Picture 1: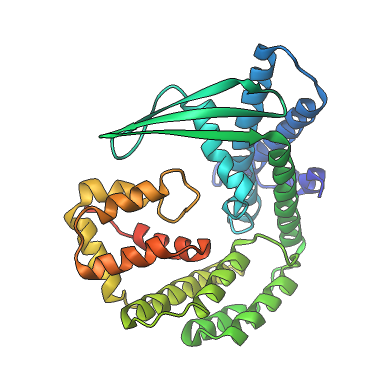
Picture 2: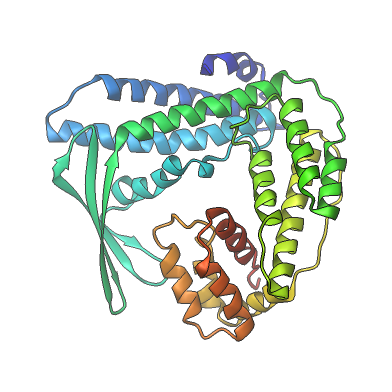
Length: 354
C-alpha cells in the first residue's frame, strides 16, 4: 500500500495543545517518507570506496531503526493505539535492532546487565553494500566468547517494505471503518471463561471481517489469538504446570478483551484471575535475589535475543527451590518460540520493590 493514501488522514489529524497525536502522526509520516527516499537511493547508487559504503550502510541501518519507531508513532497518532503494529512478529526486523546496536549503536563498548562488556569489529574482507560481516567479542567473568554475524541487506529491505505495507493497510482499513459496537468483547469474555477452540476461531473470523484485515495480518489482536491457540493445545501432565497454562490463557484472553473494548471506545473493568502457586514462588525467588535477578528478566520473552540463554542459565545458577526449578526447566526445555514468549512474559511481569 502507498504511504500517500494515508496523507489525507495525517493532514486532517487535529493539531492542538490538548493532544500530541496530530503532530505525532505528521512527524512519523514525514520520517517514513524520508526513509523511503533513503532506501531508494541506497538501492540505486553503486559505491566502491569504503568510506562511502560505510556512510550508506550506517545510514540504512539507522534509517530502519527510526522507521520502525515511526510506524509505531503513526499508528498511535492516527488511531490512539499501537495494536496495528507488532514488528517483533517479523523475525528479520526483530533481529535488526540487535544488528543496529552492534554496528551503529555501541560497537566500541557495550555493557551488559551481568557486568560483561562487548566490542564489535567489522570484517573488511566481507564488506559491501550487499552485506557485511562482523565479530563481537564478549568478556565476562571467567569467560570469553566471539560471535560472528553475517548480514545481507536485500532481505532486510524486502522485510521492511512487506511489514510496512501490512501495517499501513491495517491502519487505512481502521480509519475507513465506521465506529460501531460489536459483540466481539462478549465473545472474548466467553473465551476467557471456557478457553475453547471453537469460540476462538469464531472470534478470529469476526475480527478479520469487522476490521477488514488480511489473513496474514500481524495485528496484535490476531497475534494474541494465536498465543491462546497455542495454550489451548499445550499439554502437560504436572498439575502445577497445567494451572500455569490455564493462567496464561486467562491473561491473554484478558488482553484480547482490553484491545477489543479499546477499539470500540467502550469502558470496561479488567478481567482478573488468581496467580498460580508456581508463579508466586518464582516471584518470591526473584525478590530474594532482586538486585541480580530482576535486570536479567527483560530478555526472557525473546529466544532470538543474543543473551537469552546466558540470562536463563544465570537464573538457574541462583540455587532456586524445587518448585522454581521446575518452572525454569520447563522454560529451558521448551523449543516453541510462542511458548517461550508466554512463559518469559509471565516472568517479566514481576514488579520490583519501590
